[in-house]
Image (cartoon, rainbow, N blue to C red; front, side, top):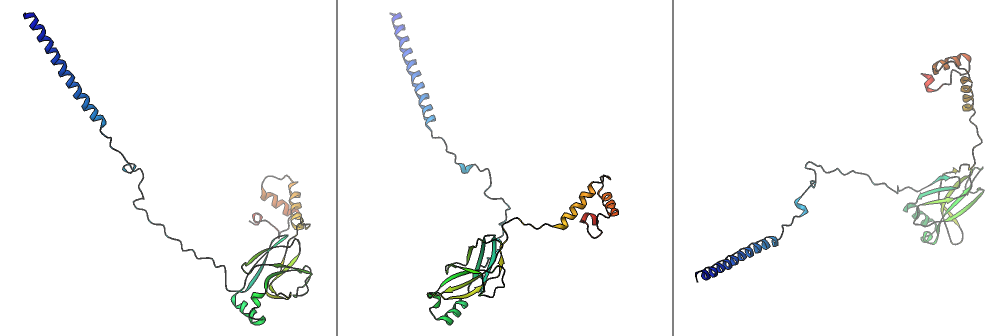
Length: 239
């Protein structure tokens, strides 16, 4: 009887201990879950700054006062330039005063009823007086442009250009006349610089005398031989 009571008591104690153990384990597991489930603190990039936004002692850069380029000077002009053996370039400016003078002379509607034209004169080999050109070519331009590339296709020739207006009846009135230009030749020049060829021959003659490596000694011997005139020398020889 006593043995049976002791056995039952032992089993009851084991059950109680097991229940206490499981309860404690559940509490520990629940605390760990709550700890792991806590949201992590977010870090933003602005919290870490590697470079300052601006130097502590930076001074603002001064603004450069650059004057504006004036494209008009209030002067009636027509300038002709040579671009290459086959092309010319012209630019011009016509003031309001010139337009008023034109309308006063040819009628209030003269400007609007006429069109602008560049008249290119070939004046190679002649003294140009305005009406004796070898030939000319008319190029229609716009009232809204002030420059033009002109293809002439004539190397080694002389040209002059008029900027004017052509009326419906074909009458041409000159407003501006350019300077005279000459296009270069497209061939290799046949001219020979005789003076430089002569000097080159002199130094070729000097080089045939092996009198040492000093240029001053070579110069002195050449002068005594009469190969180098006293009035012709390089900057180095002049020293």
